[in-house]
Structures are given as C-alpha cells and as structure tokens.
Length: 431
Image 1: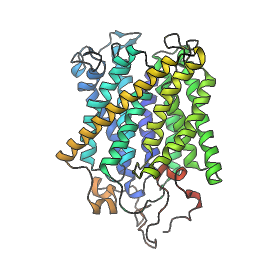
Image 2: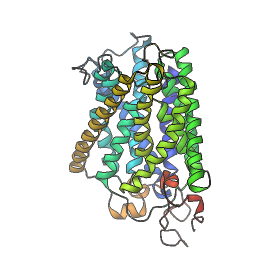
Image 3: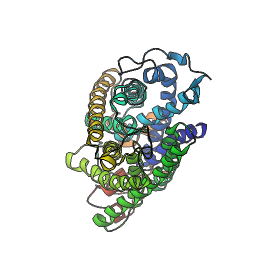
Image 4: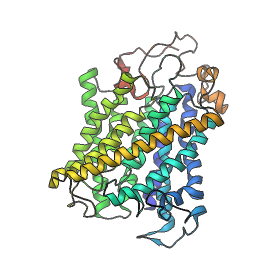
C-alpha cells in the first residue's frame, strides 16, 4: 500500500505532462502548475479537514463530521488491515489528482488565483462528500449497493461533469486553436498514467492479495484495449492512427475500468476497455457539436468514460471475482444492479454540476476567473508565473513567432481525433 500510494502520487506529474504537451508552448508551465499546485494544495486541505469530511463519522450518510479534523485520531492504529495513517495517505493521493483532472477544461485562460481558490473549494464541497457517499462505511451510495472499486464516480465522473460546467462558465479561448506543442510530453505522460494506474486500481483492494492481482490485470487489459479501439476509429475516420489518439484511447480504457477493476473478470475488462475507447472517442466529438471549449477533453474522456464504466460494472460484475460485490446483468440477469449504478451516476453528476456552478460564481465574485486578453494572447507563463518554458526567441506554439503566419484553425489538444481535419494532415508549424 505504500508503493500503491507512491504510484498514485506519480500520476499527478504524469497528468501534468499529459496535459502540458497538448497546450501551446506559451502556456505549458501554467498547465503543469495546475497539476503540481493541486497536489500541494489539496494535500494540505486533506490533512486539515478534507479527510475528516470524507471518512469521519457519518452525518446521515451524506458527509463525514469533525472526527478527524487536523488528523485527530489518524495515527498508527489499525483501520481495517492498514495503519490508519497509511489509509489516509492513499486516499489523499486520490483527492489530489481529481481536481487536477478538471484543469484540462480551463487550460490556457484561468487566473492562477482562481485555480487555487476553486481547487480548495471543490475538494472540500464536491470531492469529500462524494467520496463519503461511495467509500465511507455509512455512505448512502455504498449502503444502496452501488459499486465503485477505484473511483469511476468519485474521481472521473465528478471531474468530468465539473469540467463541462467550468468550460461553459469560463467560456471559449480567444483566437484560433493551435496544435499541441509537444506530443512527446503527452505520450510520456500517458505512459506514467498507465504505470501509476496500477496503484490507483490494484491499490484499491487495500492489500497485496488475489483481488489486487485481478484488478491490476484488468487495468492493463483495459488500457491496451482502449488504445486499440481508439486507433481503429482513428483509422476509419482519418485513415491513420494518431499518437494523440493512442494516448487518449489508453486513458479512456483506464477510466472505463476504474469502477469495475475489482468486480469483473479479465474478459469483461477487455470488453470495457474496447467500449470505452470507442465511446469516449464519440464523447470527444460532442464539444464540436455543442461548441463548448473543453480544452483537453476532460468531459469526453473522464466524464463519458466514468459514466460508461459505472454502467458497465453493472453489466459485467460477478461475485466469482469479488464476493463483496454483486452479480450483474451477464452473470445473473441482475438488472437491479444496473439500476443502482445508473442512480449513482445521476446523483453524482447532478451534485457535481450544481456545486461546481455555485463555487465558480463564488470564485468569480472574489477574484475573477479569466486572465485579461493580453495575458491570454501572449501566454499565461510570462504573465501569471513570470517564467517561460522555452527561450528560443519566440513563444513556441503561440502561432505568432518570427516568420509565422496568422493563426490557422487546427485541431486542439486531444481533438486530433475529434476534429474534421487530422493533425497529421496539417503542415508543420512555421517558425
């Protein structure tokens, strides 16, 4: 469990690279700082009050109380089979990465002060209550019988739905979309996410046992299947398999299997990965139809993938893998489980959307949301952080360097697989 905690922590810098490669070079530090900032700030929040709200004594199954404020009563004593402080550490890494996922929706335009305030508020008022619902012993969704092994609802659905609200409230980026400035970063980040996800899913067994082995295997199979499925759709639509599509597909497979990892057999995991890769591809296309600017496709991958994975858990779950779970539709014709999964999706999505909207309005009133036009045009790195990732005489990927032409409409971020023109069909950027 110590190793699993470290692996989940590693997913945060992995996410930073995954997102950082997909933005323009003038905004890469800003994007990286969203992940590293969330890791630092949410860890402090988790120690002071977040853990208590998530896992303290239940208040009607809706939220934890003040039992563990300032880590009171969190020491070397046992919590289940683990030292309590180790359970605290493991769960804290989940809390840290979840608001970092949302940052993909507002990349390249949000004030850093707004990011910090929103992240603290969101971790407190959205993440902690939902974690209590699903994972605390008296949480109402857990007692209902809804299954979420490692965070399909708690992590991915909350962040994906919140990302949609953020994208709508903050508004679209100004100017033409530019291609990702460094897809090598993105592929490296995807690889680190794949690696760290073993801690995320297998660690959720809370032991090095047979169930953890199944969850780890299911994680690996679903990631591979997701990449394959996305690549097939890429090939059909674009006549080529894009590197960005492969990275997006493997993450989609990982998201899809997260709620099911410890409840389904390996062939079920393979099916979930394939479906997640194909369906999340379609989820990414939604932003072109509805015209919201989800910069790095958090909605299409994490929102759609989290909901799909939760539903498919109700289809493929079997007590042959985990006696503490339930038989789903295929194992026993148990449609009631699918209904419970659907109810959990609706409840978590509605709660996340409403609270996120309210919190954004609070942040807007206190510090404002967007940087000014000059900062957005010249880049958040120099304006917000006073630094640049690259010193080459131009802002790499800005579209306005020496010798470059005016900006052109090209696919953005993960949208190489969601735009009508593939990235690989574009000429190399000038300058």
